[in-house]
Image (cartoon, rainbow, N blue to C red):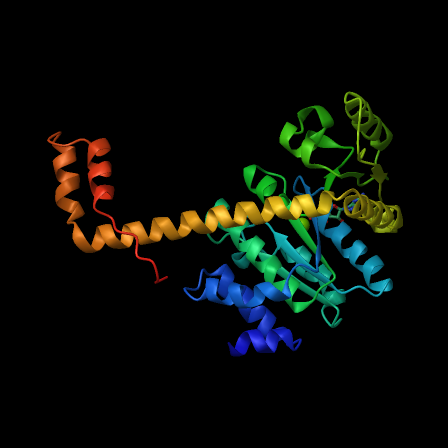
Length: 316
Ligand SMILES: Nc1nc2c(ncn2[C@@H]2O[C@H](COP(=O)(O)OP(=O)(O)O)[C@@H](O)[C@H]2O)c(=O)[nH]1
Ligand SMILES: [Mg+2]
């Protein structure tokens, strides 16, 4: 496919177009992803999550600079389903990120309100694949810590950074257990504000509750406005990466990811094929009416529908 060819040649417009195609659920998207797949597997994916306003975008912006200084190319995906703006870009993000707009080693993309949360995490995963094939060394995924969605998205990250702040509602006690468990690195951002040390200590106490670690998440304090602590965060990320690589955990993580993907693909195909057949053969409206009238029940009706399905061997 022409777009894929252009992407592999380093064409940024092709990159943007391909991400849009997967994001919008284009019918061709699995063919595209199939073509891209042999070129993927080289990016290192970093998830950055935390409450709205914690400073995730600011951190991404600073971290980007560190990575660029070391000569790495970086892709950024900012996922914010809570953003009211179309396309999900928070105005502030756009402005802040403009510094990097002319840098050919950086590609930034916002994913927004489109689709369900499940759909969003799928689209994010697929956008990561596209950036990976494009050849970005690192991919930073910023997600808002609001629910299951970011936990799902984080499953695609090799390293996960959880961003906390000293002030306000996201004190360590009230953080959702799920979020705490996914952290490979904790950042206490806004360390210029009162209470930062206490927050860091609270995280330490929480970490002490577990006795043994293969990797104990470091707690890094940052002040993005003064670029403090960013070098330490970048170092911690590199350390976590070497830990994953030398322990064989990275391979394990990626195997789990492939297992999930394969499962999802099979389920997706089964579902679409089954419904295709059912719809083409059986007048569902009549059946539904019968069930409403209590002349049938949905349980045996579903079994009967499936009893007549034939799985073709060779189409798609
Ligand atoms: N005092 C202080 N404010 C910060 C710091 N980092 C970010 N902020 C501010 O916090 C607000 C939210 O930052 P943003 O990066 O958009 O947070 P996000 O919603 O997590 O992406 C902005 O007004 C930032 O200027 C910091 O280290 N200290
Ligand atoms: Mg943000």
